[in-house]
Image (cartoon, rainbow, N blue to C red; front, side, top):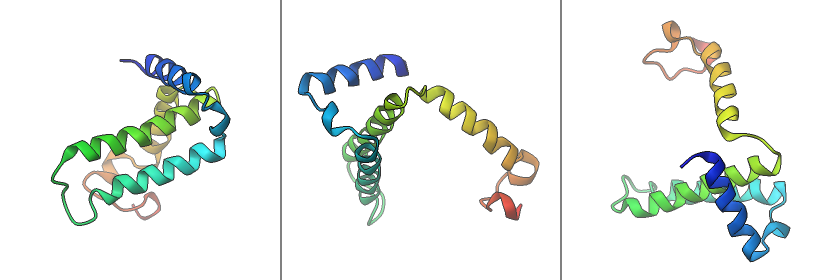
Length: 106
């Protein structure tokens, strides 16, 4: 399924429930952070026993990210591609391979 199809399905889901009123950029950004914390909680004491919860929390994070991008009329694939292009410059393979140092320490 492509991003466009998923976003269309999300729009329909939200519209059916009249939830647009709750989806301000601020609320969506807060929800991303909250759901990301719930995802992190799954790893609090080590590797999760049940991947179902990880999958559900990751889906929640992605859902709110897609809704926020959609609010601003941004294409998720283009956002990712543009950021990856910038990151390639900051972390050239010959300097960054096998290292986790920040770009200003390579």
